Image 1 (cartoon, rainbow, N blue to C red):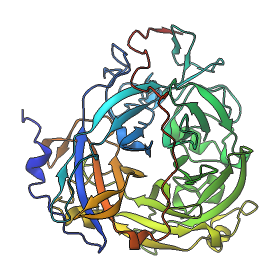
Image 2: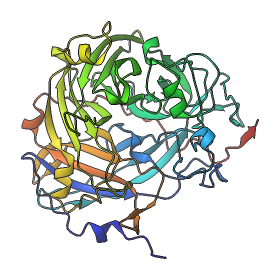
Image 3: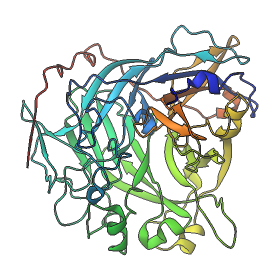
Image 4: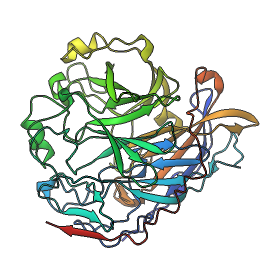
Length: 469
């Protein structure tokens, strides 16, 4: 049996030779192990309930050197029960950590090794009762009703029923008050407001019915086959942005809605929400890249959206190739869009009609090229580059630059095969320095940091869960 190779051995020379003038990889770190949830025992598939995995599914800046990271619905790469898509009674959560950016000296000619430090794990719950369907009920010793990654935790009706316990977080952003967070999800799709200190749900933003499916199933393929409209299973609201002033949420679907052509089509919807009213205000069309051929199109998926200001955004499009997929990464790009020029498509249905109204976009960065320029092979670039967040400005070669943090979802697999060799597959953090001229309209998110936010002391160490059918 081969021992897992260390990442450093397979990426021997990290030299920040940027493929894009003004953008350079300046820092890299990784994190594995267990979290601080206080959970013990194992999930149905035998993996630990406190496994520190899937971190880079979503990342949000929380001010200073603090970031929140939200894994998705939990470990489901191990086969244990196809009737629930191998999902488990994983409690959705977010992790609070620092990246080690403060006090680090950065250079454009080398890559600093960062040491991410975990300070808290916050489990997500509801104060009201939840529908667990045929899944185990997850209740806490203090009356919490915990959300679950199990795909069978729902009741009949529209998938956007906020009483359903199943939750698959894919986007996270800190609210303007610094005390709440917003999470977007694929199951509903949902957008929930949560208390940052306790993880309790404090608000629900209801999306239009067109985003929901009405025939629910614990098996994703069955759910797709039995619906003619709504989000595609496991491809709901993948990305979430918040404008720097904290007034507007901007969500983006991973794939087109079923009525817009589903995964065979190439136009997804962007949704804006006015947080003062909690209402959806606009829908915009975004054209995906075709990485197949004209005769046989194959479209990328969306993983994230992050705000530059109140109308400009970066969007992460990618293939699913690379480390974790035992294949060669090809397409990992960030695109720039300006929604001030976009046309509303709320009343439009169908791929061709949406494509005619799609917002203009331009390539901002080719992440695959940038990582290859820094010594990463196409097999060592993470397959699921999913998280984007701007962070604090730092000095690079003595010049103040913006930081963009890019993270991966490692599917809770610390080790994967690469050409038949067991290889380390950690949660990774890539920090890019970006010169001000490339982000001329950039506004940092305004996040207060009150001393009362004692996130490292949540009292979860004595957590007791009761599971029952």
